[in-house]
Image 1 (cartoon, rainbow, N blue to C red):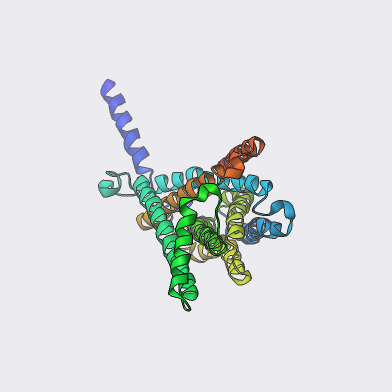
Image 2 (image 1 turned 90 degrees about the horizontal axis):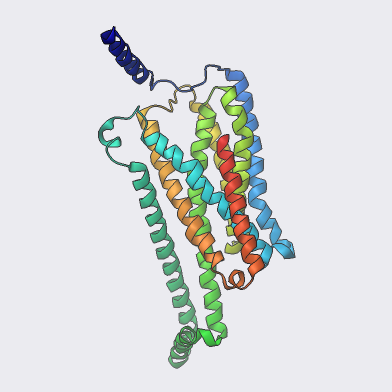
Length: 350
């Protein structure tokens, strides 16, 4: 009897391991292609509108005096958006990457022997730091070379004087000395920084948006898609708000701004359309799909976590204006918690 019990126990273990059918595309027993297609089309328009409104709110807000980048309200809104982006990286993307790259449908060598998810996220964060630093430094040097070249055409001594003024500002910044040409250069440096931040941030968001779009589009289960429609609409709305705040500070020209808005708004709907097109052949549990999605998700998580903590939160929380006002400091902290909390709550459905 004891022998039979032990044998039955091992049979159960082997059965549970065999149940990992890597050919299964959808874990729901109820499939209805027509109903699923209707929901997918609804999702395309719903997510498109939600993302578009979200990214446009901060941009349209620049015509509202209270929403300008130098006002207190803008700091509060940006802290909320940064919380959303931070939660997106930690709560939405990183767990998906872990799930993909630790799937039993992947071979133990090498995927079971090394924590690839954390490694890829770390490399992506370091890469973002390097791109951030190198791009900002390159454009700053280019700006000063052009600026000095224009001013040095007539008189070499005037050019030397300009450099002396530049050094003077850096050595006596605490005394408030500022010269017009150098102050403008500082403003340009800050503008370049915001433009690099907004473009790298959009890259991280876009990678994730395409992946979740393809996953939704490839599903044929209405019960799986239905809750995702509303959840992903809010998801894109909040992410759009975060991106829009960075775009406002970058002060892009109207054409560049329109391209960034459309690019962000269309990524998830385009991903859904691609998912619909490949739904008959796409297997989300195939090793190739798991590896590609896992690596891209881990990289996107690393990018967004770095951007949220370093470029958005650290810069604003250490801003002299925020540091000098206790009420504003409390407001941005609360806004950060609310943004991160609401986005984390959405993980229950998406």
